[in-house]
Image (cartoon, rainbow, N blue to C red; front, side, top):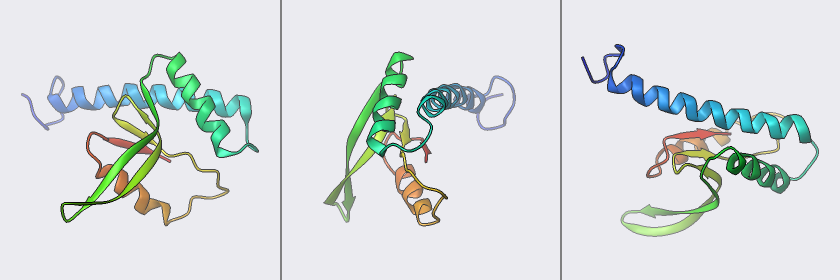
Length: 121
C-alpha cells in the first residue's frame, strides 16, 4: 500500500525518513557548535559557526535568505531567515533565556513559506 497509511514502504514513511535524517544531521551540527562555543556570543557568531559546520558536513545552506511576503497579491515586505538548509529547513537562531510565546507565531509564518517544510528555533 502507498499513501499516508503509515505502513512500511509507503510514501509517507519515505518522506518522514528523509526529513528525520536531514533534521538529525542539522541537530548534530548545531550541537557541535553549541558544545564548542557554549553561550555568551552574539547571534552572528552562532549563525556563522553553524553555517560553516553545515557546509563542512555537505549541506546546502542559504544564509540570510530573503523571503518576499505577499498579502492580497501585493508584495508587502521582505523577511530574512537566519539559515535555510537544503532549501527545506528554516533555522532561526535566537539567544534567549526562555522561549517567548510570541515566537510561536514566527514559526507558523515560516511553515507558510514556499518550499520550507520544517523550522527550528
